[in-house]
Length: 246
Image 1: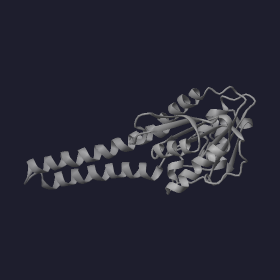
Image 2: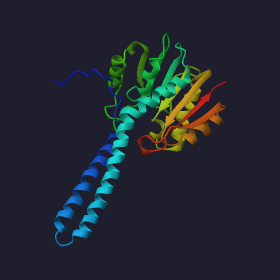
Image 3: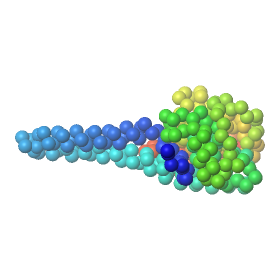
Image 4: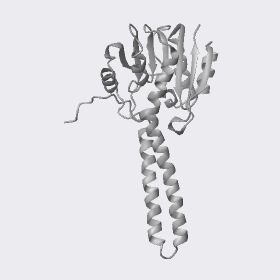
């Protein structure tokens, strides 16, 4: 029988890619060692050089995999808290998290709420996040002590069921880039804007297309659209865009 979880788990982003990085590191170094052992007697110099080259390539794969692993397990939680703190939630807001996954932003927002509620929506793809499911998100909320302040619903990010001006705050983290076409991503951003109340705030964190999101928001009439860089989590430039609705 599996042990009952006692700690929340916000998953490993792009799990198959991380696995491939570590697998490639192992195979590359193993091939280098094999080439060295086979040729070291007849060609000690070149075989040692090849070993160094293969080990260097393997180390690059290992570094990429390690950075992605750290980004998923540590970096994204630290950045989540920084971004949510910057929103200055008062505690009574209704918050929507688009592409919530295992509840990283939804639960983080709920911890800052008193009478408010946070809703997370997703389609729960295990390809983009390990262990991704609404049940796992609900368990994380329970373990974090905010089960009564959150709800998780299945929804197409490009066509939300909520009426206009339903939420005080709309957030999304590392989700919209998974929509494969520009039109679909634009629709998701416009949906976030549509359900936001006047006076509300919107924040999107992502590793691709953040400039596109900012353009869509400006076209929709957003005020104070600000794009900020947050380093290279997952070995990619990670940025956020923040906007306000008048």
